[in-house]
Length: 452
Image (cartoon, rainbow, N blue to C red; front, top):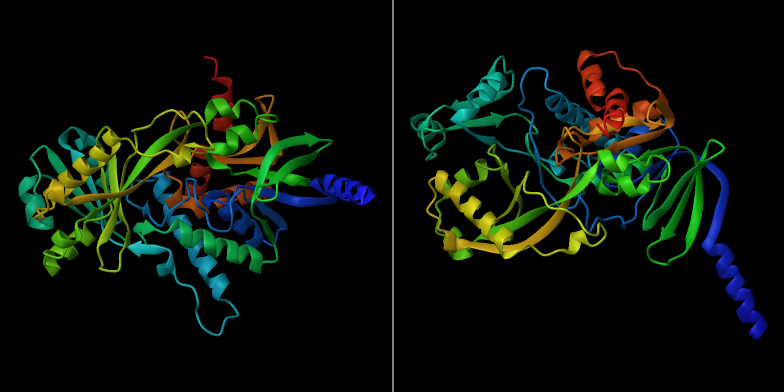
């Protein structure tokens, strides 16, 4: 019996420290929107890829968690973020076509991911120059109210004369569903014959003799193994700094995680049921909204309940706090002040919509602590890593620093990352402009300016 116990013990020890002799072509670390998009784009090109995700197949935390993100196209002439959103829409159509290919009926639709609705932007008169630049030569369909009278006539909104309103109308502008998009990306990755390893947390990433050694611990069993790969894409969101600490340590100085709070608010059912059909429709068509003030209040409809009552998700782009423990931040409850702020800004917007709803009619359903990964310029990186702060590393790609703007352009970021892995080139003007803004030249400049 004693010998049997020893045999089992040594067997488990060996199994828990497995190292595969097989060397993967590409390993993508992070199965959220960015990593999943990259793994799919590589799969679309016919590349062998392994996607590693520390959560299960359905995200229960993280920046990709939830069912709604704002998807908006409106931007000034040659705006890279508009280009990224539109490219992502185009790539999503290819994803849907791929999933439906070979099926007897169309099982997947763009409407599974996108909810097209007007996007409302609120500006102050002090931002008139920004608004003029935005609308100059604008090709996307929009309506503009430059004062209170026009806002009432066009949108039925009550605003002050120091406020301006723009409403964008475009297919696939409105919101997108990260949960649905990730699910379809994973389906496509598997359909292409590639693998996704869930519940696998990367604990170490090193490079030896030109090969990456990725140490992984199974979050359910505690067993560990080592995966070898020729190339790696780091798409771990706020975990990228920890992930790259041994091979690209300065990334932690360029991409800084910060906590953002999100509130989920409902209108009391009794009050909501007193609204007319027209008022309910007005509410629906007035979300999502971005109030371009110093805090950037934003809100959208996360989903509807069984009584068709909308759940309003509310946050502030610039209300950011430091993080003590990245693994625990997702569990933090909102403070009373954060809940109060969410209700006050929600009722302010509902009052602007001229709807008969009072502060007391709002019910706080739940909150969520999200994390933004921030660069100094608030522009993400999709770049080769850099050795010794000057030398391009063609075998390591960094996708990070999304600053809350990543979701709407997720497949575009994945496309750029896949092109870097494969050495693909695209000479189109906007592609090159976006590549320059996101890429290695900027990363090198930022690295060299760290201590200045």
